[in-house]
Length: 278
Image 1 (cartoon, rainbow, N blue to C red):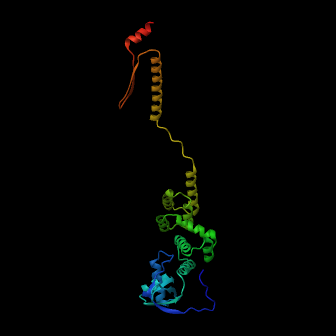
Image 2 (cartoon, rainbow, N blue to C red; image 1 turned 90 degrees about the vertical axis):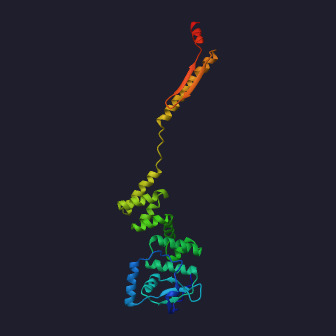
Image 3 (cartoon, rainbow, N blue to C red; image 1 turned 135 degrees about the vertical axis):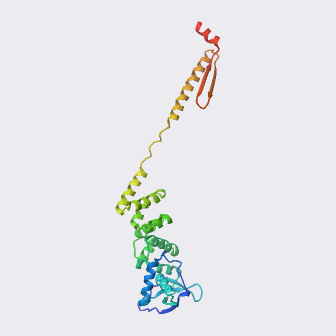
């Protein structure tokens, strides 16, 4: 992706003022272990900086943008060094991002989420396909795709997974769950200190539970009673209509309070007895 150097090309090492070196905005590494920086600073103090940093010309005259070697630069600054040995390489921003990513990948400095974020950034900056990026990194396209899937986890959940010391395979297992279940599942994995195999079994059970059909809701007894009462009222109404059709004078009254529903049928007294005597 970037211009390859000829084998015979020897890049010149120059002393670069530390105050004039800016961080690489495409730096894939998001966190730096302060203890590791202190140890590196102690090594540099004792043995000097054995490998120069790599920079490119910055946007403003006299400024440089770091490509590779941020841990070394931080250690040198911690020692109060005003200048560090470095190589100035005129490359484009995208090439700088690629170099920063490759340098960190080769040193295994990135955690798996940082690596996924770096690959996503590289895809965005370069406009390349996953297959092209895979070739740049010496990986297969499925491996790149699997790494990118890790970014489906919410940032807060990613931090929790890293803080708990869970592995990439733990994270991949959690990805099988719906978003609403992932956080609770991670906490359960942490609480029970599940290894990868146990985590995969646990997630499989959760997935099966998700796929199982929900039981039919149980209708409350009050609804059944209400339905039966309505059937009774309908029967009474039909009886009243039959009486009216046969010449009876019938009045009905339906009332309801907090305790009872009343259905009153009123027939004139003389009509009742006259009907009985005939």
